[in-house]
Length: 483
Image (spheres, rainbow, N blue to C red):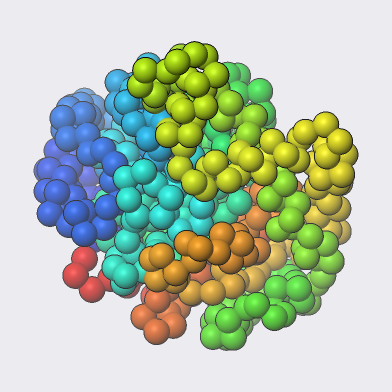
């Protein structure tokens, strides 16, 4: 049963081939057996899962038949879950049990999903390797010596290892798409505002977006259907009708215009990845797509702009973790200043401290105009580049990452090298666009992903292209040895 996709589980439950409780118990046993070598979970919610599975089976027995009813998933550990530890991968929140459910959690619970647990992640979603977690690094199931990507590496590793069919994740600069690429999954970052951020612990509020991680585009369509929609509790959530994402999966690609940005294929891209990207283009051309070269001239400024804006927002968002109201508090502070300093110094890891310091500096008097304001102007130029490109093409295609997964610890002393792994993904966050990564092959046994970008609220188009590609390729069906 662990090899079934979300869509196959929906059909199996509808046909009464197995119950949600049977499936849930099978996957919980698999998590207990295999996760110690992956470290993909922070918390496993066995009692909750079994009670939700029984409730889902009762709802089916009463005549309900939703596609997610009884489907087992996990949540990245920054989605608040009522009465369950929500740690954000940090010592700061190791003892925090959320008093409410995030909107994403409550919407999926209403749809009947079964929560198997909370997945490991880079601390406060800051990282590209899932090595900055207070609970230790997550390992890539394709090679346990390598990183799975971050910050949603726990969700990615768990799904890739067939511990569960799908999981929620978040993407601030590529944290759904990059781990999807490095673990041979399909991962979708929706348009900014498509999925509610209420109850999602913030890193950078103008960039964060929740989305699905699964093995196929079909599964991502099912999970996004349950997650998307307007939420009055989130002031940035957009009141836009949610289409039936599954309905357009099999649409023809005849005449689809695909843009290949020339800036994607310069120095810095592993030529073996470039070859697989071109191979994926050829498959899409066979399906009727038309390919043309385009330009995104301001892409070169994306990394510096992002690493001013994101830390600036992080320094503001994380100021609430001060040892006073909730979370970690140092022992025996001598005064209020000591309480603040030691609680934050002991509660936050080095990468989080680094980004808070950078952000505070960028926002300080005398530097705001020179750094933060300039970065926001570059952000507008990047968005304008995309708007011009989408006048010529329907989707933009390129590599998800410039390199293959790297060995755990290989970039610990060079954070900038890790930041550069996000070069192709962060532009979608800066512009607020939807983006998807899909499996496109392997190099030396390590997965490679191809990224698709589309205009605002065109998630259905991305899922359609990925689904048609997955009908003529088998990269998404392959499982890591031992899992």
